[in-house]
Image (tube, rainbow, N blue to C red; front, top):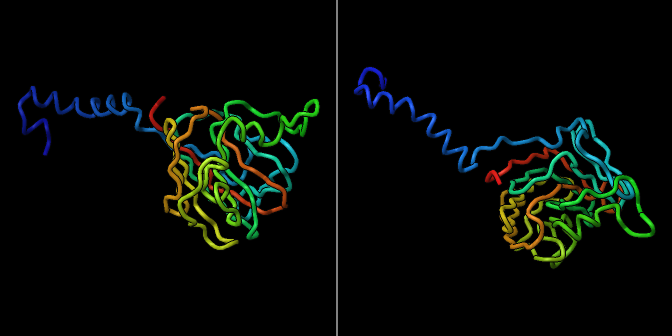
Length: 223
C-alpha cells in the first residue's frame, strides 16, 4: 500500500520521515556497527609480533599458526572498547596452550624479548593490563579453555576433539565479559581493568600447537 495514494498529505509527510527517524535512533543508540575482519586468511596487515616465536599463515586452511614462544601476535591498528569478537581456533595436541588477549591498553614492544633485563615484550603487558581468554583443554581451574585466565573459572568444557575447529565468541561490554565456545556459554565474568585496548593471540611454546582463522569483530554501543 502506497503512503502517497492512501493517506492524507500530513500523514504522507510523516510516513516519508520514518526511515530518517529510524536511522537517527540507530545512530543515537549506537546499535548498528559493521563487522570488521581482522584476519582474512591471506595477510597479516595490521598485525605485529612480540616476544619469542612467531605466527605463520597456512594458505590452505587460511589460518594463523602459532610457532614457538612464548610470544604474542597483536592487532596494532586499532583499540576496541565494547565489542563482540568471534574467531575459529584449533589445537593440534591435547596439552596445547594458547589464548586470546583483549583490552590491553598499551602496545607491547615489537620483536624484542627483553629491555634492560625486564620482560617487556611477549604477552606480559597483555597479561598484566588486559585479560586473556584461555585455550587449554588439559588445564583446570581458572586456566581451562574459556576461563578468564587466573581470575575466573569457566562453567563447563565445550571444546571439540583435538584437530577440529572450534568457534569462540567473546563479548566485552563495560566490565561485563561473556565467553561462548561452539555456541555454548562457558563464562560470565565481571572485570575491573581497562575498558579499551588491543587484541592479541598467544603462541605459547610448541610449534603448530594452535591455529586461528576467521577473526572478526563487531563494535558495540558507540562508546
